[in-house]
Amino acid sequence: MKRCNWVTDDPIYMTYHDIEWGVPLHDDMKLFEMLILEGAQAGLSWLTILKRRESYRIAYDGFDPVQISKWDSKKVTVLLQDPGIIRNKLKVESAIVNARAYLEITAEFKSFDEFIWSFVDGQPIQNSWQETGQIPTTTPESETMSKELKYRGFKFVGPTICYAFMQAVGMVNDHLTDCFRYETIRNNT
Image (cartoon, rainbow, N blue to C red; front, side, top):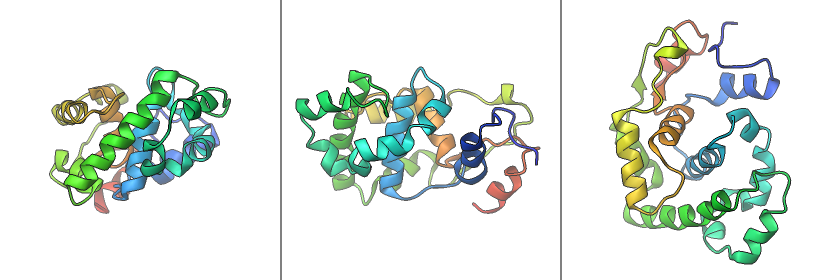
């Protein structure tokens, strides 16, 4: 099977690419999880985060924004001792800030899904890249999303992180055209 050429031969990476990456996601909690994980990835490889995802799920209370929003400095101290996650104080603290901002958005909008997908008018952008070098790291949509999320108090949501998030949750189809997933994603959205 021909995959996007950024995928290594690591089974975790291949499974992620083959099953999750680029598939439109509309579950509020999963969208929140992916936004937090993309922020945790800043400066690191995505594979590093994927290998720690289950540890994050345990440490981060199943990515429940209500629970995370209640964390205090004691919880942060405990998390900074957890070898299963990225032990960066700013990233851990950003999860608390982001959970609170997420809850405000869900109180204002029908759902986080409705809010976040509004940046692509509710439909995935279908790209047709032939080479990895053609894929941008930011787009006008990711820049707009970043500005709005920052305005609403989110942290670790720069335009590059937002674009990686958009790719991961299927807001854009950035599978290469010769990847076996490209047509499946294109035809099922």
